[in-house]
Image 1 (cartoon, rainbow, N blue to C red):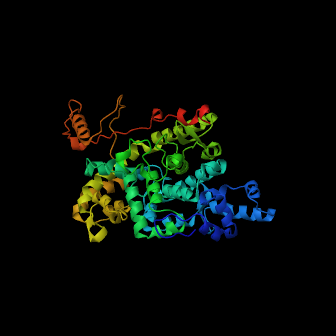
Image 2: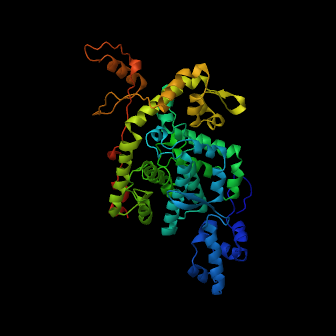
Image 3: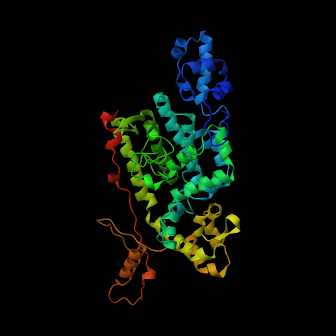
Length: 482
């Protein structure tokens, strides 16, 4: 598809027709008011009514039109994935994968410190991201084949896949440990999440690798499609329109269902979970009871209260409950594992002690620490799990305390859990509150004990386990919505 220049939408008639061998029929399409978006939905009956004869010509046109929606006439790249088998990805997605910013994900453990508890959990954000990009394409393809009236375009398909591919670009060392434990301690008050960093890293990746021109060459429209991709990752980008009826700018409300594929803010049923459930269970040795292939067979878009949502059959509620049960099981048995949490607490302490002494060069030659690297994507690109070994094998005297903590981890001299309790109501887990609890624990030593305990001898950790009540499964699956 040709374009008149970067940042402009391609003309849908002449360029498409000429490139696909339809130029001789261009005038006929114009006379009937058929432009690019409508071409893939023509049938043989339509062509016959328009006066296209003989049958061979109609079949030739249909063959060319079928190629219009196909992702690319270029050869797809095949990846052999242990979870999804041999998967094909569009060349544009491969261009994103073959960048330093995406390759960085090879060196960030999917489950952080959990790998130091479960020997098989050695997988990384890299393969998970490829899996999510693939599954995003599977769901879009299934909806398009089942409901051509949705007018899902090649551009929609590519944008959703790119969003799935890039949704975790912003993860830091040891994944959720970084934004859930380390950053809140070293930069209290900083409302920073990896989704925000993913958007910033995505912009950085596109800019420094010159991918805007490549995206336009593959038929994407800038900046609209860039906005659409980032909105799928982090939600609405403009906080001033959050309360409006439609806060998104990348796609109109008629395509609201596209925002429920990669990161479903409505009910949590999205391809990101489908991949990490299957992948994490595989590497952890835990049974996965959810079958995403079955969901793909029954998914369709329905209008519910004025908006289009991805729905499924009412009889599929059991499969969906299996999905949430799998998530609950993973949290209880792996993600919130007591020893895993202890190890991540120790790594966090080591990183805090090492933070002022680690130097990472960023843009314009500026130097950043571990905690300030989140402010510069060039520096953040260099921040991966390797920081653990960098500290552990360092001989710098200023890193001695941090080095000792990490040495205790590799020697399995871990902190001990002295007790736990379950809160009956919501708990304020601010840093001040945690310190106050640590002081309270230190002062609660048994009578007759000579030990001189202080708040620094204890770590109070609040863990939020998954709750079923957070999601309303009745919304997308009630029979009357189908």
